[in-house]
Length: 382
Image (cartoon, rainbow, N blue to C red):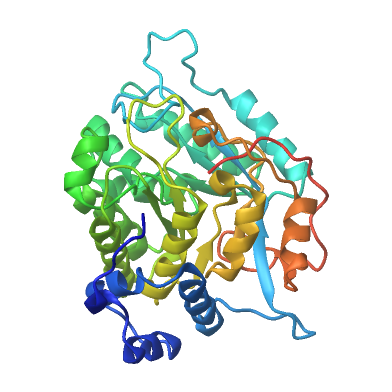
């Protein structure tokens, strides 16, 4: 059956020119753009990528696409918010519940550094019994042993959980964590920043204002972070656009987001019964995100949920970064994302499109003059 589109929803030539010229669009304009054929929307997103401040060139004039070598370390899988879309969490009584030891985290970071890694992304479940001293000791231990490794850790939802458990304001917790070694914050737990949606998929988790409030405080303290969106479940297109608007407004206020990453809901082994979306809708949403988020310099491709081929195609739909090889990841992989990639694969995918492949750090500074050591294609997800 052919989809019937109201002629009034089709973008005007003036709107298309506005996007081409780099103008800021509003929510109604974004909805109209969403009706474009995918290839046309992709071309506009590619244009916006080329206009973005993120675009970088090497000394030979080659257009650079970046990637990072890091490792996701989940310090515990014990969690008391029971998100319906999560297949990772366990209760304290489950046989496979765990809390990481210092020896275990040392081994993981040593392996990461040996493979050219510059960062660990550390997140966990909302454990109800770990004390603030446990976290501060862990951060201090890591920074003492590995001073050159950035700790990109703890999502806003975790900080809201910490505030409740530690009976301490988020700002004070952030200051203590930074003093102990925290370097930046991932955008995990963003999902869709619309409370009606959040109450359906994760009613015990931080709501939209709380999530954004943590980011606002972190940015004002000098901590950079990423922003994310997990879509393709119970939300509407209007919800997705509202999410983008809230992220963009926050960036206007504080400028602390270094990148935006969107990925699709992975349903395997989860309690959330919702029809997820495929590669076509993923590319459409990433392209729309690049156009809408005119103040966020970097857009990451989510090859982890879409596979290597679509991850590569996404570099023509607004992305300027292929993300991480993620030497280890345990969350989305348990929900069915099973794609793998090493540094050699990353560089090949980038260079096949005519770009220069360069390793970066968390702040999008280029790392060294040579590629990182070849990394085995280990299980990865984001």
